[in-house]
Length: 62
Image 1 (cartoon, rainbow, N blue to C red):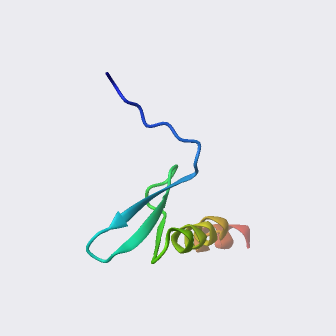
Image 2: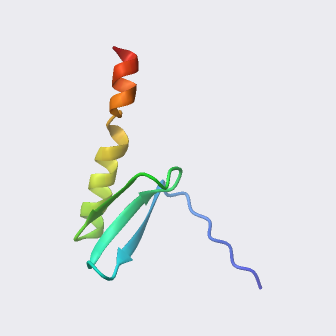
């Protein structure tokens, strides 16, 4: 039997057992992640990072 991991979420969450912090990572870009002491906090921080245009994009728009 083969199990598949399918999700419609734009992020996934893991727990760093060394620091006891949750890490939320963007599904479409593993380089974008944020951590927090709760899952909600990690996801909120990730949402803020994803919604903010990076500095390179700001310079191109100027």
